[in-house]
Length: 188
Ligand code: HEM
Image (cartoon, rainbow, N blue to C red; front, side):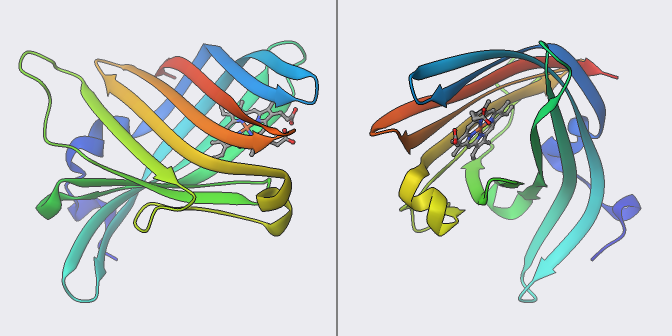
């Protein structure tokens, strides 16, 4: 690992810090249909440093922690952690995450710079259960009863705000459910 102080975090640099937002909307599966949960949350991104793989690949990484609470009662109902990684030589962004349901994934995408005149950074990553590059891994119980078939996330940040939308197709209760979350956060 290289010390974070020696590292150029590329397009991820503007994420570093603590963010909070209270305008979250979660759409989640229930046996009798769907549940819509307004939420508030904090996400903290911290420099993890630089990594060299097989003496040839150079990555830079941020570690993050996301804590999501229901507006109705203030209880944490989603807890997530992982890394965002950037490989400058291939313009590849990776997002690894794990949640305490027995599900983790490594999503990937390309970032080729901001559109003309856009001062914010937009990154899109995705993973699917059967992809041979960007994959989802889950426990045998989740595979059989609540399988996350696909994940895609779009995150837009800069000018002190961060917005995201993510969609997980979940095979549950005999149907493919579109489980989604979106929020806009500001620097805390
Ligand atoms: C802001 C982020 C998220 C929130 C607020 C959230 C919230 C929820 C809620 C409320 C449920 C319904 C079950 C329950 O009441 O506990 C649920 C189910 C589920 N979530 Fe999420 N989720 C989030 C992100 C994710 C992500 C990133 C994944 C996977 C990559 C995921 C996978 C699942 C799965 C597989 C289920 C089905 C389990 C069940 O309903 O029994 N969720 N989520």
